[in-house]
Amino acid sequence: MSSPLPPLYALRAFDIAALQGSYTRAAEALHVTPGAISRHIRTLEAHFRCQLFLRKGPRVELTDAGRTLASQLRTGFVALESACDAFRTPPQFLRLKAPTTLTVNWLLQALKGFHERHSVPEVQVSSVWMDVDRIDFHREAFDCAILLGNGQFGEQTHALRLFAERLAPVCAPSMVAQAQRNLPGCDLIHPSADRRDWRRWLKDTSLEQQVDISRGHLFDTLEQGNQAAIAGHGVSVADLTLSRHALEKGVLALPFTRQVVTGDGYYLVWPEDSPRQKEIATLRHYLLTCVPECCDEQ
Image 1: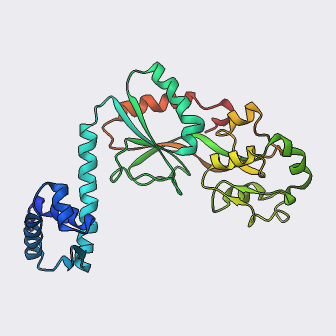
Image 2: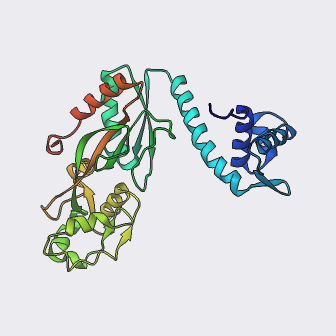
């Protein structure tokens, strides 16, 4: 038989105290007295036979043993919190995580049509900036996500590609002739700090050795890069699906016909053990109908 666990309320007191770095603030968060928090910590220290905190005036600091325990417990409590949140969330709701550029340029319009056709589920979108698109369904309170990647988003997840990433240079219409005539002399706009989009587009072109991608303006998102290009600050590289409306309105133009399919794409991702499989399937089938025909090759 496994060893008996210490009291759950003592573990919770330790978890909050570790997060807050203070017995007093932990007591306020849990609506108990600082003395109660101190007693719970002593209970754990006696149980594990090691010191968990060092006192630093009004604050407390984790020992090495305390840091190890805190890390493991935080993972466990996040999983518990997520499970409880999912149980409390009405079944007619779906919590969806998505990158900001996708949300602004495609997802909001798609969901407008979805809600006009389906009364349930109601999709609650959290639009966030992600340096690398990822999701941890054990630690984050989402039922599904739409992420940019190669389709591998971790074990025990399903992923369906909605559309492929297709890149091409874009600029203001007034800059098209200049870009065509002398791209190496144009100011470059990079939608990501790693400059990967220009690198991907230039690969295997006659311009690869002429264009210096170490220079130019750096941004965090495709949307920021597009806005800088619209304002005439240089030539950016954009995903053609997410830039479709700007191109159709004529505020962005394509100085070159070459497009690059990178191998990445935007995927709907969900946990294989999700209790919301039916609702996710409803959303999944609808989103596929929203992909422009030129972008839906699977």
